Image (tube, rainbow, N blue to C red; front, top):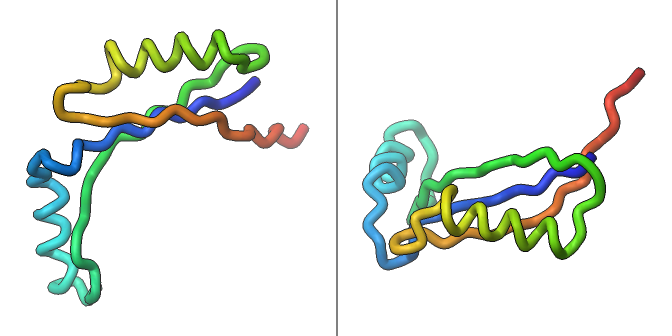
Length: 87
């Protein structure tokens, strides 16, 4: 089993009110030196079997058509190692 991660972020030119709210709250919480915050979404997809180029292409299509609004969001697709559960 493999895990494919799709990270979705607003494009840099798109206003991020949630990220701005977090950024404004940080100094009040004692966190200084953070000049910008952008919020995004992370999708973890567990894939049965090996992840080859065809599987990654289908997941890219899934992200482009369903997980991200490509008018205002960018996304990346990457494969992560999954640690086997202890038996």
